[in-house]
Image (cartoon, rainbow, N blue to C red):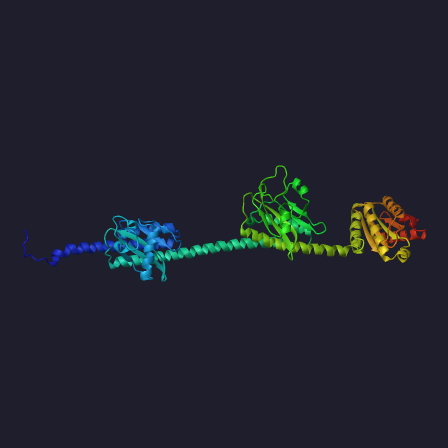
Length: 534
């Protein structure tokens, strides 16, 4: 039995002090190990879920938490690992605390009794009466909080408070870095998307700018459009160009379309089908299903289900055609897809207009403006080609010079307007009688030159005599008189079968000499070079 007058000594209190120190050391070790683990996770982990799964058990172990932990961040505005409190209730409490405390790095202890004015009794979990809120922060910015509940009031040591503060700062660093990483990732994706879109438009525009003639532009542009994966198109489509004379759309080029469709859609009126609607309205038209779209007038046997993007081709605001492209049925074109095709269509519209101007200028530079026949420039170029081909393959080539008899007298009698009409009528007769491979050129004034490839002197006389006889018996009508008039022509012809006819100039000179022989012999006749060389 202990003496009631016995007084405790320091020796007697030693075991209790040691136990207390041992507990503090164990807690300190737990905190240090926890912070070390969190530091490693901070350096090596990018995934938010993985980081949180690493942190939560450490919080619960170090803080001896009985319940669960709620984590809320402003990075993704989602509550992770929902506690017994609803996330709305927890956020509401935190909102009140932030309003009262402002920015804080220190954990906040809350007695549920103090919350009953804010939250209903049902919001407070049974058995838990106390809650700790610890802020997640970075660079003086609140990024959220983590919260846990306990059955008994928390008596945190200074080490506990420092641990929670360090923990909140470490989590703040992670979530801020995660936010920046996500923003950079999204920015990179947007940049890559923008680059791919710009590169696709650039690739098509480069092809558009590489050609001057309409057919080459259309053929190469469609192929390049279909090769751009980012446009997400089926490799089928066509281009219609507006014929201003007829007011109809004419198919200028197509890829991947069935023959039954190209034959049926060679020429369509404005307002017909999707292409006609787009050309008429000047607006881009999309269709998710051709079979279900009432605007899609064209139907044919075994037509497959598909969608369309139809883009008007414009120049200076004027519709000159449409670009008709196919997409998978049921797909809705994206805004970026529409914008890319709209930009491409603008470039294509300008290029096609320039090509038409170029072709008109080229045609005018190589053709007579009155008759539409080849002029001397085109004649000379074609003559050199035919001479080279004839010599290479030992083939015959005939050249004829044609002159209208007494044409000066005709102009004096009927006027130059009537003379111009005679020249046009003669050019029409030449085209009707001669072959497509033959070339008729207006040599000057009332003189014409005819090239007849693969034709010797005897073969050439047949169509030339037919032309001469036809003109001799033709009843020409001219302005200023109601009575038909008649004219005749003289023709001189030469072929390269003669030893002297080895060059184009020699052929022309010899045919011209034969023409003068025809005129000297009374006109209205055909004379061959063989006759003047006899």
